[in-house]
Image (cartoon, rainbow, N blue to C red; front, side, top):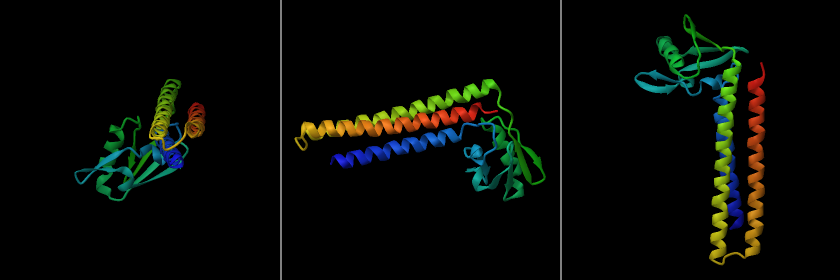
Length: 185
């Protein structure tokens, strides 16, 4: 019973870490990376389709992405979608190839991105703590139903706290890595 609660908690906490990684990937670092365009939706035959499903996105160099659409007629739509996105990117079209140069990050935008990264990290910490709260409530319910002893409850609470500390430390480690990445010029 307690092992089920712990494994469920650990699984939910690891999902919070995965979500944090996804959010961090959306924060630009000034270096070209195909995942920057993951959130860009292109109007393709009337429906919003992810850019990765209508074109091939590759890295030309440290500051430039290359987009090769699978159909020539969709080039203007891709260009429009990138400009509409809140990424601040300006695509350059040469025939059926779209190049997206990455602008240098100013000190101000770097600080804004760091602020956003910290907010995402705090959100992940909160969700991890909510998982801990839920797990402790389940353990308390077991004690109330006299399925486990109070000693088992204390032991389980300590183990759940250790799991929580481990995942909060992972969040802190991911945040410091992202901050370091953002401050590199």
